[in-house]
Length: 162
Image (cartoon, rainbow, N blue to C red; front, side):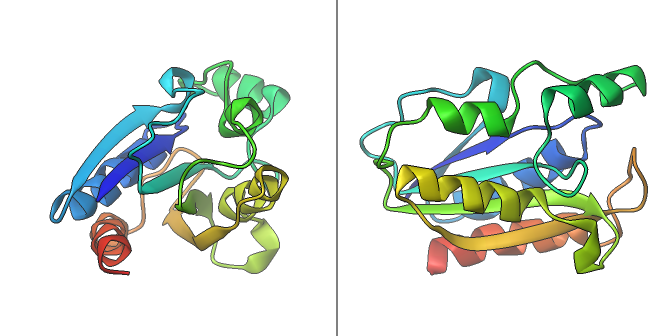
């Protein structure tokens, strides 16, 4: 299986999750991890799985104004986020399987989810996210809650087996 993990991270938590997912994927295949600002607009023809992840900002994927606010709060924000990158992709997506993940504070569904927001955005590409998963941080800057990196690696293994 050939996988591409594209992530947006501002305080490092989402990047850690992306790397952990890739570890699980690599147990039975290839997985490349790329920050969203370096992600390709043209996806490889031999790509079997696209994994897309980002932080939850204001109940959804980040926006330019939420990234600017995070930057003023000490984040390592970029101009391009998952929202903008998704707009550059062709329709339909040339990937048989796409999944999304996000990092967010709180376990309540009321806090929103960038993973669900990204899954919704994929519909405009005639694609449906096969799975949507949230990973949890203890605070705005992190750290990840205990066990989340293990859970991310296990999810990567599951994606290969599914």
